[in-house]
Amino acid sequence: MKTLTDSELEEISEAAAVAAENYIFSKVSKKEVLDLELRVEFNQDEGLDVDVEIELFLDELSKAGETLADEAAKVALDEIDRQVEKLSESS
Image (cartoon, rainbow, N blue to C red; front, side):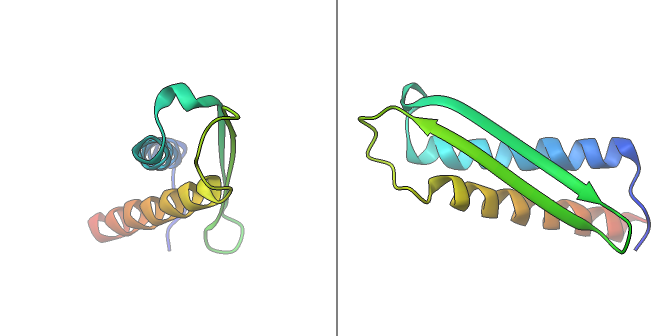
């Protein structure tokens, strides 16, 4: 697999963040989210290694489950896979 450029990595990160946020906000209202931190890290030393970490702080009255951040991270990783596949096909 070719090494991705900084702009490609940035585009993939943004798509992953949008996918994760859309997933979270499909499960809880925006006013329930007190803080949301999303980190996407890429390592291209041996292939492409991606790490997605989401910290989600919800209002104490929120009925959202404990696994919402993990589920959103999975959605983000799935989106990264789609984006990378799309780039691979176009090269």
